[in-house]
Amino acid sequence: MARWLVDSDVLIDIALTREPHVGSSRRLVDRLQQERQGLLIAWHTASNTFYNVRRQASPEIARAFITSLLEYVEVAPTATAELRYALTLPMTDFEDAMQVAAARACDADYIVTRNERDYSQSPIPFLTPANALAELSR
Image 1 (cartoon, rainbow, N blue to C red):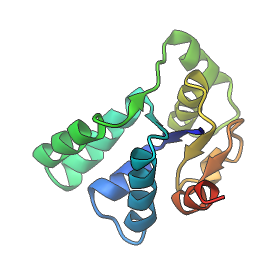
Image 2: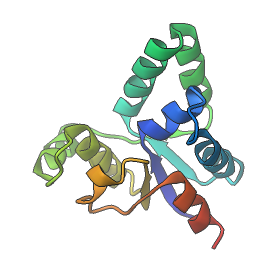
Image 3: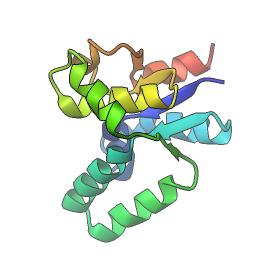
Image 4: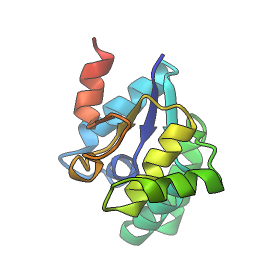
């Protein structure tokens, strides 16, 4: 069974029903949840998602979304060592490097993101939600 670390952009797409991305993002998360696949998030993904959903919708919607999410995701265990590792990665966006460090800490097989450009230097394979769905169908 593969382990999938989901980036905040995918979760924000779901929470805010952002078109055209919500469809594949929702299908992927639903499928991973139903099949009890390893669905993971980084600690800071919760705050990034909350902040963006609160800003664009409301604090109540953000809180409800995160509460629901925590019923079926695992938060990657991270500490100082992972933050140091993130600093060594050749990635331009430090938040994305932190995602990679979290994925490494929990032995994720893939990072699911729409942000393909910023993950081009990731040592952990990344997939878009649509590509992740295709991978699951193999």
